[in-house]
Image (cartoon, rainbow, N blue to C red; front, side, top):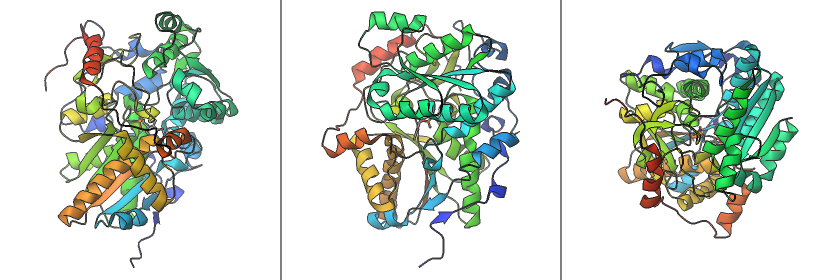
Length: 457
Ligand SMILES: *Cc1c(COP(=O)(O)O)cnc(C)c1O
């Protein structure tokens, strides 16, 4: 029996005090965000939507950015998060691979999202903002921001995608408990919401619609700004605390991963675990890095790399990213947080550069993996997280076939205790696979017409 602990822990003193900005180390810089005519957008163009201190982070190429003391103090309520060795899962698989998971489900809202929500609320408050608007899909981001706004002392309003608003009443109650206002999107509160409701009264809504509504309200008021839970560079930055901690935890046990895995919706938890390891990879280390997504929303694996808008009303600049088209209405699969039409420009860029791999997984395989995880490690994962688990299991089986003792680490992005309808559906045989039909994809990609072309590598 080895003496290696089940949980590799850091003390609060060992917490990273700076975030890692991968923009400092990209072998080729990213294309800039542009306007509809293809001319690059300057920081000023974003000033109505975001506070300038976050816009500065968005465009920064400094490698290390200090984490403010007050933000660190709040993160310490649950950080450093434990790195677990999944011995019981390994045993069930009979694999020689060593499987580790970074448990981000220990935060008060139950996922990695508070890592950036706390920081964003703090920078907005610092800038004099009184009111934040945002969107939420499954509700994890809305609840993370609601909690963070309460802790920091700022008001919060959340536009929640209609289908989740109806299917996930408990997330809505969490937001209200933390004092936020939560309304279903599309709503009659905004011009774009009213327009969409007139066109499609029965729409389940989408993140892209909710984003448009939240931005519309933010730009109308001087004391209000908008927050995004994923996709943007500064969100990826704030999440790097996950990978920075993980790297220290591996150092403690004298080990380094062969494979780093994260599920990818907008890309933030994946970026969080992987960018610090990509720093090593860019500087010569050998490590495989894999992003996994649902085959129902296959942005990285089937979307083209294009300039596309982050929202349906095209209120955001055009961002260089893999995208299914901003009018994409995702099928009602049970991994709500993985249904965004685009992918973070930074994650898209490292994919395009060949620094990472991507896979798309069927829903039933992911639920099966989630159950095996719950049966061996105890924790019930979020449906999003189950994609990372399923990919980890694939790699662990591969290692078994090859007879190799590989070290695999996954980001365990959140728990599934607020997503039990999905488990109910799976356990009663109501979950089936849904690879996105090619004709739906093609129809959705038509919304990209007229966008400027991205520069060649
Ligand atoms: C939101 C969420 C995701 C997906 O979002 P990313 O920005 O891609 O990380 C994944 N897992 C959980 C638990 C989430 O709440």
